[in-house]
Amino acid sequence: MEGTKSILKTIPLLKTKAGPRDVDLWPQRLKEEYQSLIQSVKNNKDNDNDWFRLESNKEGTKWFGKCWVFQNQLKYEFDIEFDIPVTYPTTAPEIVLPELDGKTAKMYRGGKICLSDHFKPLWARNVPKFGISHALALGLGPWLAVEIPELIVRGVVKYKEKDDDK
Amino acid sequence: MSLEDVENIKKHIEHFKKTLMELTETQSPKESVEHKIREMSAEVVDSNPYSRLMALQRMGIVKNYEDIRKFTVVIVGVGGVGSVTAEMLTRCGIGKLILFDYDKVELANMNRLFYQPAQAGLSKVTAASMTLTRINPDVKIETYNTNITLTTQFEEFLRVLQTGGISGNRVDLVLSCVDNYEARMTINTACNELALEWFESGVSENAVCGHIQYIVPGESACFACAPPLVVASEIDEKTLKKDGVCAASLPTTMGVVAGLLVQNTLKKLLHFGTISWYLGYNALADFFPSMMIKPNPNCTDSFCLKRQEEFKNRVIEEPVCKNEELPEDKVIHKDNEWGISLADDSIVVNQSIVTDKSTVADNSTAVLLDNSSELNNTIELVSTSITKNVSKNTSIKNEEEYLSLNDGLEFAYSSADKTATNEETLVKDTDLTVDDLRAQMALL
Ligand SMILES: [Zn+2]
Image (cartoon, rainbow over all chains, first blue to last red; front, side, top):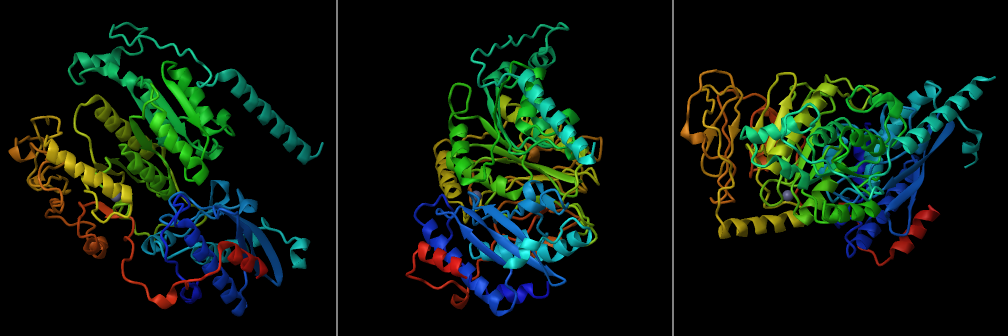
């Protein structure tokens, strides 16, 4: 991922160390998460590399959305979902792509993506500055870039017409 | 009949099989109000399942084996290590086991011990509960098919730890047999908050290393005090092929780790021998590095700091040496090739693994941990002539000045970067509410 590092630099870092159990500070952290995500999407659009959308429940503990990959001018779209763990942001959220559960060995049970050996140390070094936008850019982005083309080649992931109308 | 029909029929058969097993095999322990427990007899007859265990008492190893009936142990994660741990404790006649796991039994797990192919598809806790109840109906088994890292289920986890004991009291010990950092950190958070002792255990993703770690909040390093400590396998990560797989596993390594875990659990509960603070296992070299890590005075977990304060006060009030008497015939080897040593605030000792059959008594091994001496001392560990694996951690060691590592051990990664962040790179303060921002996001 030659681009990952430069993309990372443009994503705003977060300030507040708070997880969902921290009733007082979590709303502030949640605001920062959204701010960082909004900027991240804007950056992607500016760079002609728009590849995900996310939203959360009211409490900000459950997140869901979509991500997509282009291969040979075809758009392959996948659902994303994850929970904010009790120990967030000390531990990163575990991103799930439910449709791909069981289709690749690069996944833990339940469709959790298997992150590179670099991700966890990097996250640990950047607590609490990294947020959801960083987990996507550093975790999910590179995973999709490597795994999806291979899944397409193997015929495990097939192009669906309806993906095209967006 | 199409292939699809056949598949569907197969699925139905599987489903019926599971339902049948669930209905016939076990009545939920929660429902069985009258839990009949056999007497733990010391009588040596073929029909007494406890005779060999009670013999420990006759031989003077354990003072009162029957005490085991009073204890409640929580096992989080009943996979390769946790299920074997549960079976061992069940066979030992533990009072009560509480199992947490959200996973199902899969055929891909059959390279490990305990579960059977026919159980595939059942929740691990249900399958485990059935088997354990059949092995020893005296043990109370309670199961939770939940993921403790979720906020909604964490509260229940806390409640169980506080009230899950045999008589509605707090549980006696928590054993972490999970396979991920998130769950370990969750257990750490809970045990720091409740001041509960726990054991962490783990097997490396390459299946050839493992460890157990005894965590007494305030007294020894918690899981957040330092990056995870792992056994150096000396396999270069770059040459470790991970194409197409997340993790490997061996029943052997898992069995060894479960054995070490339960052995230390028994020692802790029944007060015999010495408990290892951190004990590693390198399967490639048959090497068992060990050490003690002190709590980090700058730990990011506020409850850890609180427990550290309490521990300091407790030691000042009652400066007792907690140690069990050590066996007298310590094995000492001058070269101490592997650098095994026991940590202490004031006394540094050299103790080697058995490389030499000649035993030399040495007074310096007499004290393991003297809690009464200054607590903030840097932990002193013996570094020895052979400096294997040292280079890897040089930079980390400098950061983590409060501790240094024994040979054969290393941090999984470096700890959080404490350098100040450039203001420009941070999110700006905003007057917008979360709802405003959520709306803004939706419009993108
Ligand atoms: Zn700590």
